Image 1 (cartoon, protein in one colour):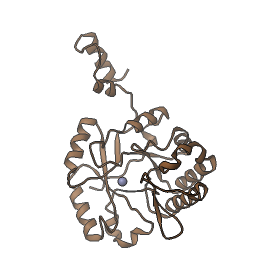
Image 2 (cartoon, protein in one colour; image 1 turned 180 degrees about the vertical axis):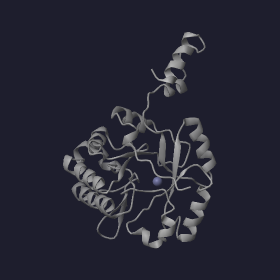
Image 3 (spheres, rainbow, N blue to C red; image 1 turned 90 degrees about the horizontal axis):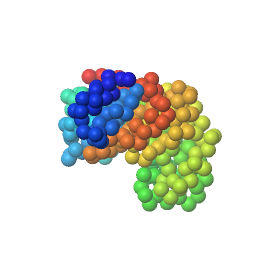
Image 4 (tube, helix red, strand yellow; image 1 turned 135 degrees about the horizontal axis):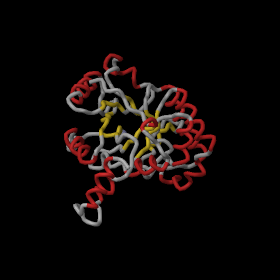
Length: 267
Ligand SMILES: [Zn+2]
């Protein structure tokens, strides 16, 4: 019996608690042997780091904040420097979420070395004709599933093999129109290719709380290869740190703290 459940049962015996435990008490009584760390959090003009930290306190979760090193967000060194200096004031991991291969050449290595971790997803898949699928959009149009899967795998492997990342985000997520075929499309061979590539470069897989991916089978395969995991809500609202799918599947897969990637904080 751990300390918390001991205290709780003592309290119940002593009649200090009502018969039915509150939702909070039920949550607190879940035996967890892994860190509650949400490494995929965005802030906005209306959703500040202060608010993120307040929610973290209530939910017992720590955070990593990310922003995009891209023309529409952190467009250059100046923006990146301001971003890092701002976040250094808070007890959060400082992360980046690049959106296209080769992005590092637009930033100085001195600044990039001050970032605690880099997370990248394969959600902007090149179609081969100059266009990209943005596969999080519900109206993503797939004409030929086999062709899409081939290009999706190629792009995923390009990121896993070449980009300087710590976390591969949104693994195994599929566009809505083909999502019903998840178990058929994620063949043994495809899953193994992603796992081999991540293993070779010591890249962790995100367990994504928004999309409920990846599934148990993939997590267990990756875990067996010694690959680490990171929880990610990819939220910019009150959903930060809720982590309901993450916690549930991590418990089901018996993940422990050694199975998790934790960045090094530079500040
Ligand atoms: Zn994101």
